[in-house]
Length: 115
Image 1 (cartoon, rainbow, N blue to C red):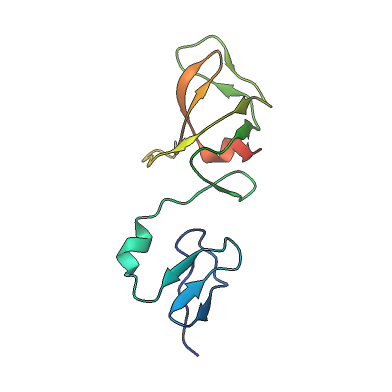
Image 2: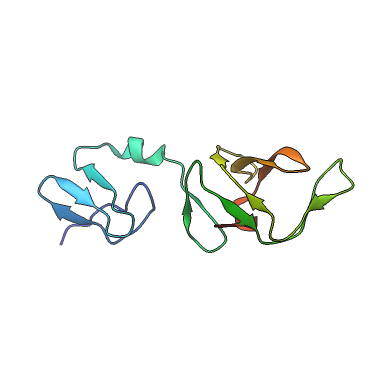
């Protein structure tokens, strides 16, 4: 039995073939069998604290009180953040957003959940 590739979008191992396409049943992603593996490694996959895949423009909720460097206030649990942007963060800060009362900030994915 041949080993099918994991989904390049969500990383699921439950992919299946349909003609000359691979299909992921978890996120409904479809890609051709001719797609090179180097293309799939360039895709940024960011998951929240519950394992849900985040995308640009999603709304998230903070699940832990966060201290903000250079500010006396922080971000409280339950703060809703609208319209996030996913960025490549070498230090784990993969979410770029604007928080009311704080301003533009980068967050780690393990401190938010999708709303």
